[in-house]
Length: 112
Length: 115
Image 1 (spheres, each protein chain N blue to C red):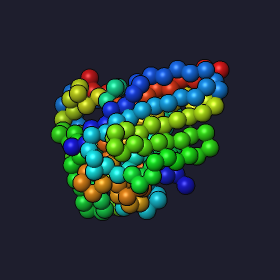
Image 2: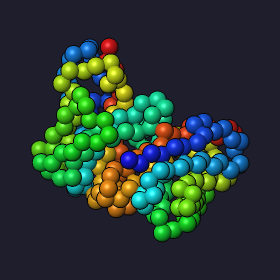
Image 3: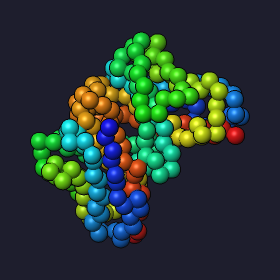
């Protein structure tokens, strides 16, 4: 089955810096890669996602890149703000062959 | 619009006790899911449902049962709680199956401690 590895587990940046979180997946059949943000005491919320036929997607300060050959995808946050502090989860879905598999999460701290 | 509502928010059980976690969604979603979240383990799927009256096993189904008698509700039951079931439980729903690029809507979670 699918296995998703996420790095780093914790990340601390200064406000205004960029943050990058990386994930690798094992199942070449995976075709959908969402990123969820979980603020303290709340459930995860989808912030961006990408499909396997797209290499990059941007939404304001957030971008996701996908390298299907290497089987890895990354979340990029530019001009970080304190409200970006949260736990971020990547996930991969092998389509009709299985369920969404989440990475173990990255705790991002943005210091003012 | 309440979205996905979980009750209770907190619960402490003794080993061997039973309980039911309730999830309700008001978005008319077909798909509903129960996840558990443990430190350093991410989110793991326990059971899910593809529609009223249906249930299916996820990654970690042992020790749990579920029921979907009404489309808007998805119940997670622990028949005989064990300390290994101490976790934060999240319910989620989606209009279509999540592998069809459908966003999951999560509830705010239930913190369960089994002593």
